Image (cartoon, rainbow, N blue to C red; front, side, top):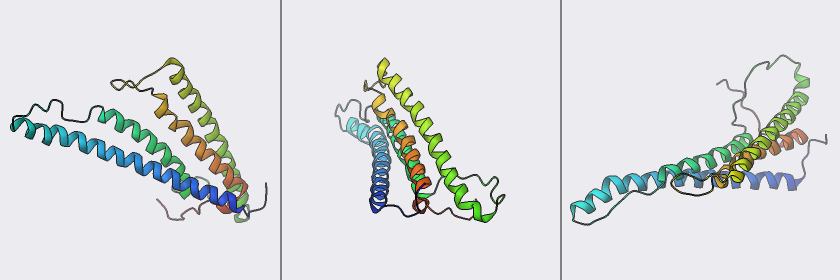
Length: 184
């Protein structure tokens, strides 16, 4: 392991990376809202009003809005995984806290970050296998006929993001977010 001071380039990388993931999540969840609003407004307002005025409006919702929203949820959720690790907002079980002397806490935190990084890397690997299988067999979104792996790629990327962050926190503990000491 190295000293506790991280290079400025690593701090900038983490900051930019965190900003990018937040924007991805905001865009994904905003699209969900717009898709659902547009679909409901079209079916419940625009369609009936158009038909009442004598227009043939046909299907007035947004085709595939529910499916597209579901896939935006996958993207937003897996971007949120990296966001929670970066901000220290992930759920941390309080089991065994205080069982070791306080002077060992920094070493235990580093080990926990390293172990978390390894676990998330393993899950990212299996996520990649899952996505590769979807791509190889040609799975498509029902009704939309888009390759499903394009959306599923958010799964291993989200886990890999968490793995890399935890590994960086193990190397440079000063970059790790401070845990809140408030009970849940």
